[in-house]
Image (tube, rainbow, N blue to C red; front, side, top):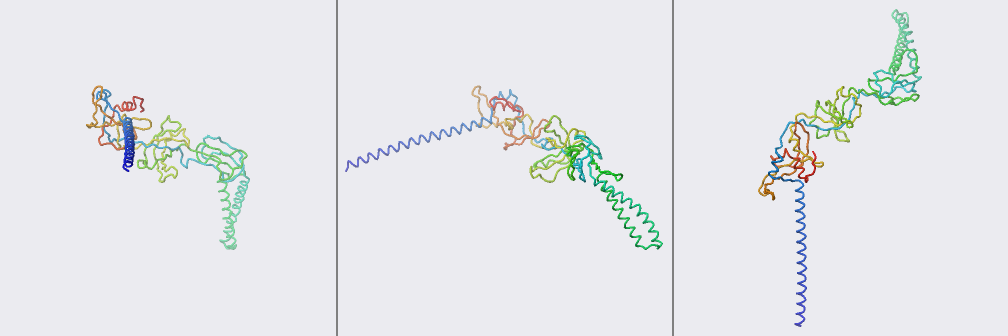
Length: 409
């Protein structure tokens, strides 16, 4: 019995030792993994830090000529960018149609031809016009006869020779014929057809001065009522319709000057002036239409529907700004460099010459308008008050931060 207990005890202690050894191995492995993760985090942090920070020695700082300044509130001519297109007022554009259908007899103009108001663009043929003229002639002839009869019956009625009823009948017939003649005359005038003579041709005339646009008829075709046959556009009163977003509406008012270029012809800048602002949003783009007039001299060569890119000049807006050389571009983002304060824990020495190093950090900004050598800036993240920002030498710092590569402006 004693021997069996001793054997069991030995077996128990052997298993216990094995478990302890395995546990020790797990602890060592866990420590190695934790240490690697911590080291990897530190390396990642240092890498991220190196991508946004750069340092110079004191001698480099002086040689490059680094200068610093502070964000200032400046009165700049702020610019709001907007896109739109050229157009003309409704009264300067006409769709020419006919009040009576007919076969196209002649066309007298070509697309692009300038025409004056009243110019005959084409003629159509309709036999009903002859009937209108005959009705007018018949009515006018009856009026002449009834007028004489009216005068005679009035005298007889006044002398009580004929009954009053006869005079009233003649008077009524005269009024009816006058109305019939006036109706026929109105129809002919609306069709620009003369009341004299007899013709089946109806002229299609230009209602305004302007250039002939699209011609939608051909000789021998049937021209229907209410269908556009010609377009006539007067470009002398050209203006712009610009789409402005809600966030910019508070800065826009009537009378402000704009500069715009044609989207596909950006070699010439043209000026305009805002004369109207819509009071409702477009359902699709959620923008408000702003209307700007173009001077007649500048409107030459423009046609409706041209797309434009415009700058709306906002006079004397007070905005936070920096000298324009303080803002540098890296890829598709913009940055300024802030000189970090010399805290004790941040003071470092260059290992080669034991010089003190000065640290700078790149801070992302959104640039606005540039005027008088200053650029409006909006910081993506808050910065400390009165931060010292590099105003000269920012390009060098960007190049150094990128490892000496090329920089963009």
